[in-house]
Image 1 (tube, rainbow, N blue to C red):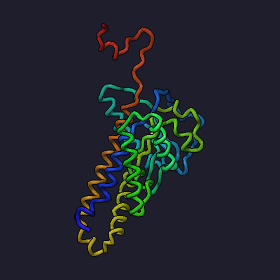
Image 2: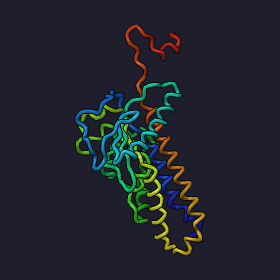
Image 3: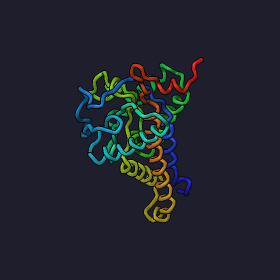
Image 4: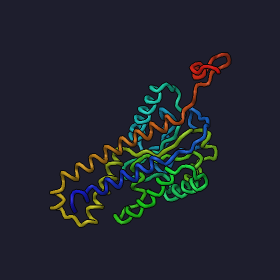
Length: 265
């Protein structure tokens, strides 16, 4: 296996994850509450419900929740720097080390494809779903499944899909949050990338001696892929938080600052 071949798993991961992040999120302009929503499950598998800077987080540990909360806080700061001060509450489903998303990935992608079939207006999303379908076959050739890949990057989820994907969510979930996504921890990103590289080495029958000789190239490919995935993780959260926020609603007698900046015709 040459140097170019050794970069295959990292390139495949970036290509497919980049396609996934281009899938548009559908979310209504719904209201949410600051307190824990009534009727929501207290746990998802082994994940507990935690408060967040911008909504709610399901995570398997306090440390995992804290890590993702820092990412959300960064996204909120980016939003406020742009002039918007009240982000809409969202929900993050944390995917920690060796965890998978708390729902059936195949069912999620099927529902996403059905939604696209109904709308058929977003060619970019159509292309992204096709890329994921093609990538699934390539992953299976490496002895991996799509769940591993999709656990390594944020997956935007339409809030009104939650009751169909996860048992226990009430039908009014989309009235409590404006956006939702799975978000991996750094340890899970590293674990997934290592597993992909190991699978590629095994498929190409690369022995320990040859792999040792290729170590600098492999280390570079793995490090770059992880950096890109971490950046993509933050960028995706920034877009989700910034894309769905509450505009300032003036009280009676108060002028809306947005209207004040626009001259009346």
